[in-house]
Length: 300
Image (cartoon, rainbow, N blue to C red):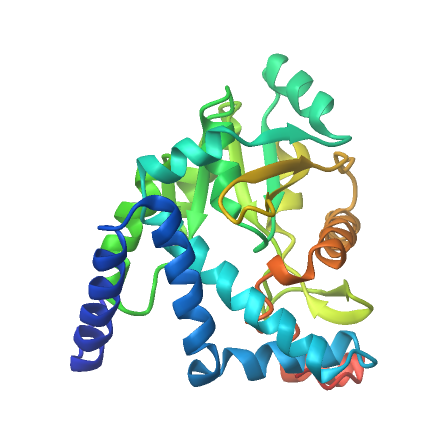
């Protein structure tokens, strides 16, 4: 059933289209920097700065408010840059293609692809996760991915068009979409999963020393279809425009919860090294009432 279009949907979509459309008229470096700056400006208004502050205070209780605010501003900047990059099509793809690939898991990733073994690539909301998909899909790793449909159906239409232009196929996170993703994997393909999300139906694991409900689907699929699970991260470089793809060590197949805890640990280490690039605006530690009772935690 399609989501009814409301007046609020129309207003928000018109505003976003105006901002994105206007930015796309500018040279690529200027547009990316400008939208990053706009997101810095709207962050306090949208409540993102407050959410980042709370998340940072939750896992870094000794961090000063000054440092939390500095990270919050940079996080907003990175989110804005990521959004306009996704909408920049060929310009973004060209930048992503210049990314260097390295890390301890890169040889294993290449060997698995050469052998025709299915691959489950897990990543996080850090830097620009679509830099991974853009680069690897054009380097012999054609990747299928899931996307969560936007609540605003008007915005969702052009958003799906934008992410599809970066690389295909992409599937929605519904029954048909997940079935298509699994079929791609079963046929020896590569799938990409943004795995640093919370789900109230998922088991509790640790993330930054705090309980976080973590979906295990990626690990379950890797085990079921004898795929190699490898964390890969698209890290933004100091120029703000280019990326480095870090391929972490492959996670051996085993108990899915152990595999996803290993992913959490890997992602946490990367985020600690690059705290201003992770999307702290997400409610990563928002627990279901049952999980709160079990863990005794009070998330932000």
